[in-house]
Image 1 (cartoon, rainbow, N blue to C red):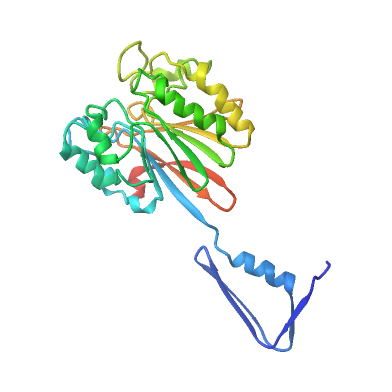
Image 2 (tube, rainbow, N blue to C red; image 1 turned 60 degrees about the vertical axis):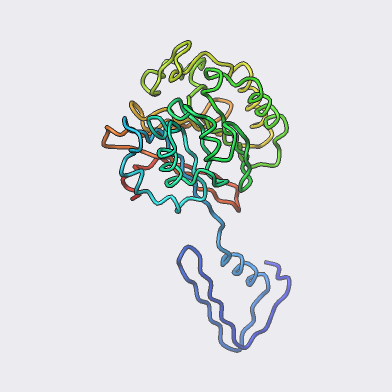
Length: 300
């Protein structure tokens, strides 16, 4: 091994801490410490920067101003971001009292609380925007990740008009981000997919239909959006779509297309014993994002 230089010290003490484990190195005189070894040791002592994100959806009960105790008791301060998948209450925006509860739980106007609206959330969109201080669809950037928050209740599951203009502007220009995360309520990518469409009755809460607001309606995901996601992936940006309209039949969903696009979903239901949320761990140094479905009861 070629040594680039060396440093002589009479006494040397290094104490570093990483992941709650301490390492002590003591050298008594006389000693010689090579600079390359010192640099390696100091690098090992540098803590890895990490962040945690929580996706939680379908927290509604059958009565307003009621959610599961497990939802109320969850320590949301453990997470750097909250991704709300929609249907947070039975009629979330019907009155200020329900919205106030949502705000107390999720801090709705915080820049890192991202909410993709469901069919139980959009009774009064002006009230939603007053509490969130945001439109119903938007883009966001945090920790090297670009987010697209979609409103799949707008135009019956179709991404059209100004919302499509926003989506295209992001998909056509994104380059520097490590990931693109698309948050949405309805699992619009199941309809029209050769493998996933037949699974809709066993996975989604609303099923399919032409005009029902809770359903996955015929839409333009594969005609207008998916090919752009593939192009983003080819630029080196990981693409993850996260839906929230499950919980009654399935608690988790994870699928990767042959082009490498990830389709995920999580949701809970108040009349079932096992409910899951989706937790993401982000290694900011390596720009790596991993995820796991966790039983919400085990997090309290």
